[in-house]
Length: 455
Image (cartoon, rainbow, N blue to C red; front, side, top):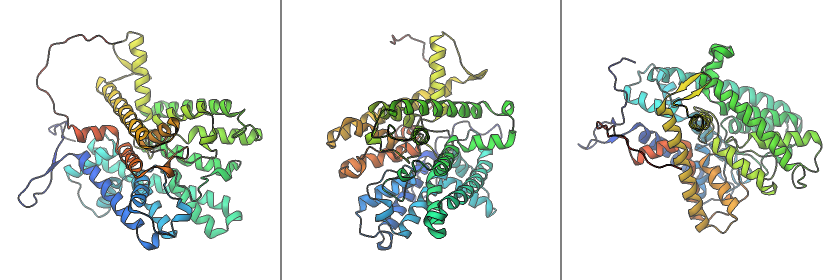
């Protein structure tokens, strides 16, 4: 992009309507797009042919929001309450929300030969978390291509696994639904037991976890891997995401196995192979996948607290996962390490991290923790439920994970509205939400330094 373009463009001017000019920032337009998608999904799910028995508007809104934000929390059972039409609508909402409606919009415009204006590029840049406008169109096409290829592989593998058990047509449909749900880290299942019946099935465990791990590392990472092919040529971001993903997953796997090994309600009575599979699945699914092969309400409090941390961290940037993101978590850790070692800069893999990125990571973490604290406070006042269940629900919603200790279906109408807000905020990003509430303005005044006592 040419050098004369301004570095910060917080406002976008839209076409005049009735002699009035409306200025909306890219995050505002992005939010309106997601809300429009949620409203459309709600309307479709309220149709008589979408459900086996009528559902309320709030239930339809909750389900549509959960699908668009790829969360997976449900107030009505997806497999029994919704017809084939309703389930397909949910799957399409998951796909649109997971890949981002801006990706589809950019690809559609390119396919039709249309030129993408600066306004649309800025919106797409905000949606895809890209630092360069020039990369938007290329990234959009790559996201769509990679997604379709990976989902095709997932559908093929799962169909083969379930063919003998369910028959070809049912196996194909289940594979279609679960692949979209897994790759987009949604966690919607066609059974109220999620994937618990397949806790000992190696193929199902590996395919499903493979789908949501790949979907959760981020498309930027996938593009970089495909382009460079060698570890030393990969970008610092790619190497950090891959290393952190492996380390976090392995640590979580070992800890959950250790914490649940003597729990008769989870792993204690299972063979070693099944224990390993269950521990692995529960270790990686909190990275915003939402499926489970064990009942979280039966797991130890220590395992649930660990799951809270894993949900809070989430997956990679520009991925189908949410949370504060792996990069943010690593930057915060290294910033703390740099301060403790009295270093003037934060470094990762022999590269310096700009101060602006450190501040962004701090802001994102603080806004996220603030939203979690406020939501827990409100839910505690509204709901008669154990504190751990409420905290688990709030973090799961904001991180768009979809895991629950059984509270979701018992939420009051007010509680459901709180969770709906958290799911939307988590998918759009707490920083985007904060941006909407207080659009940043650059100061031209430089104040004198001062010292504030900290700690």
